[in-house]
Amino acid sequence: MQDWTTDSHESLAQSLKTATKLCALEFDICTTRRQQSRHTIRNNRKPRNARTRIVVLKLVEIGRSIVLHAARAISTGAKSLMHIKRTGAVCAMLIAMCGCTTGAPPKYVSEIGIHAANYTEDYIHEFHLETKNRTNLSAGGSGIKQFSKGGTGGVECCSSIPGVGQTIKVVWQTGGYNDPESTWTTHTASTRTKGTTSDDPDTNTYLIIRFFPNDQVEAEYIAQSVKFGSLRDPRVDLLFTGQRVTRHVGE
Image (cartoon, rainbow, N blue to C red; front, top):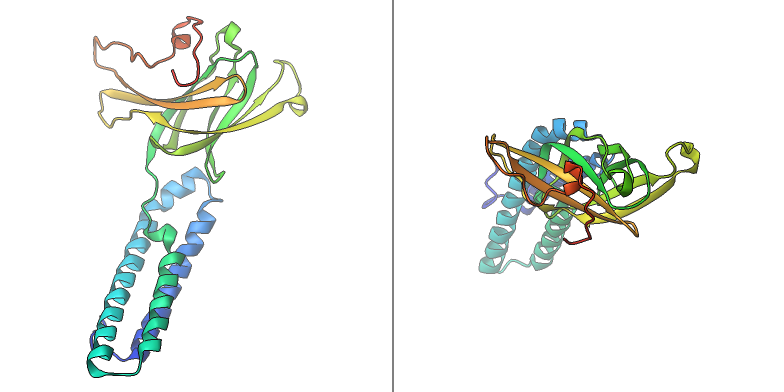
């Protein structure tokens, strides 16, 4: 490892070039990651974290060297203040470039089942979930009946979804049951996930997507105990028990 307390400004410049290449690599990973499938993202998570540690450590070393070079310049009266300013500006640029590297990634909840509750009179042919940046999460459902006909549909398992407090986008298509796909209407709405998750092996965590009139949606995590004698979570919609009891946004 370099000793940047004694290295020349030229050595520092070379180190900055190295860090730039590392940040460029990570920046490319961040941008292309949006276009990858959920399966690929999950498989790439470990090597991505390893690269992240390398870049962060390099930036920490560079920051330390800038401070030490500045102290040397001031103590010796060297006329290199402009060089120090330029170096600091470059380092700031690198940190900005690596924003997606050094920022903590949003927490995902893995292997989640998805249920849908429809409080509208629109038949929902299918729906899927996206991140707020419109990356398809490869998660959703289909065949969601109108409220008057039960308001539920099939259950999809299993997906990785942004955790509680994260914003997701819901995209769904409505139309008559026998209508051709070319006549379906597409709707989109964003919502912030709420609810509770758990890693307890005696708990089943799943996500309920609720559809309301006027293109309003909710996404709520339910952590349901599966221990013998456990009561149904009161947050679970009564539609799932066969009772057509209406619900409103925010309830």
